[in-house]
Image (cartoon, rainbow, N blue to C red; front, side):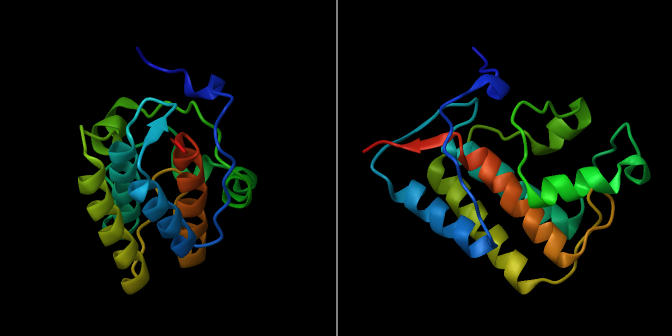
Length: 159
């Protein structure tokens, strides 16, 4: 049964200023004795998805959005980069094929995520975002922070 993520009220509140803060949180979650997710994906799947988007910012994505990037107002881009992403966004079918994770263990997702973070630090090339168009290096980093805040907010470590 699918969870309506826009209606989940007990998500964690997270804020990341940089990629190293995301990695530190991911390492804590991966090392936790037990975590539960309150959305539709496991921790491994979330890590796969975050890694896929990070790698896509370097390698490019084949996603074709119905609204061309020039029509996305700068104000929406600024709000997303400086604020937060809202849950409940449904990926268009073509995007879902590229970005929805397959079954993934925590170990598999963690390995992919660590590699993606390493690439973010070592590679300077960035491709346009399929929704916002060209982004600077810093804008991509902020987008990765907001994206990780959204998805990792659904992961709750059990004490």
